[in-house]
Length: 183
Image (tube, rainbow, N blue to C red):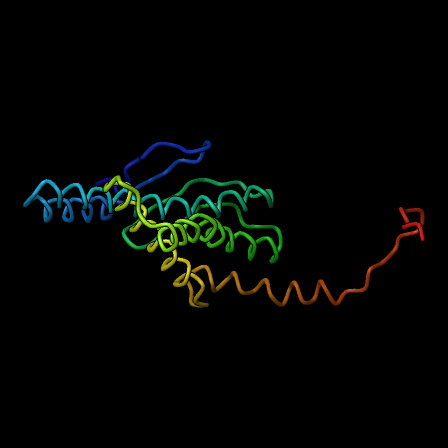
């Protein structure tokens, strides 16, 4: 039995869905078939869930590429996503890549949540459902992933703090023959 179903590629990165994720989506959809509006709401929630997970994993992909790490793929499970990539060259790169998913989700989910709270919803019910599920889900996922517990991102991400403190304490060295500011 194949454990993964290929869902295509985004930016040359293969996306794989674990069979348990598809089974969970099927259970949710079957359980919502009592009316068309329930089924539409369940389908919208599933799409928002996939979008939130993919956005998080894509944040890891972008930061991995920024730190010259090859990306092999994204695997999505019912409660977690895994970005498969080369081992980063430095501890700093490893920590920065861990922050990628959190930053991407925060940069998209928080403005949508603020929009909902300040401006309100749109006249389109499907868009409202997507915005509500997506924004709240991304905020919850960011907060959970900040916990310093393996395998969550916080276990690696918070390691950047001592590295940045060490970097700030390092004296600036002016190399001879290099550029010197004019006074």
